[in-house]
Length: 104
Image (cartoon, rainbow, N blue to C red; front, top):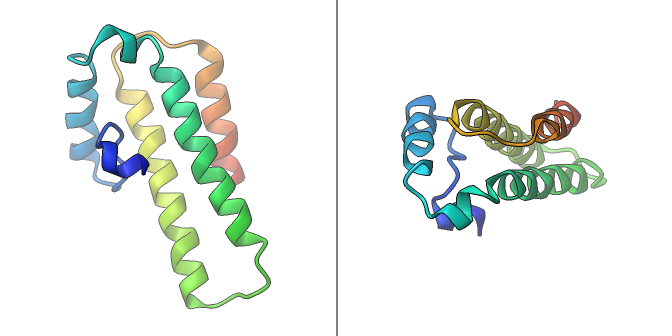
């Protein structure tokens, strides 16, 4: 669902993250005012998916690949958050970082 909005770059490509960061500035003010909440909700979703998958009883190649994919998406989100050129509450970065560390 998050990926279908194409609002956040979750593919792992730095150039794509840069393009998304440029595009954020042209979004409607109602979105940019709440962008920190969007970032936190996306990272929280990735973190919860990661935790649920990690707690599953089976450890196989598919599970490892899915965990790796979730970590890559979280890392892309962190890179993107650092590229955004407008102010967000400082605790947003701290919360994003905490969730990212939990996944590594």
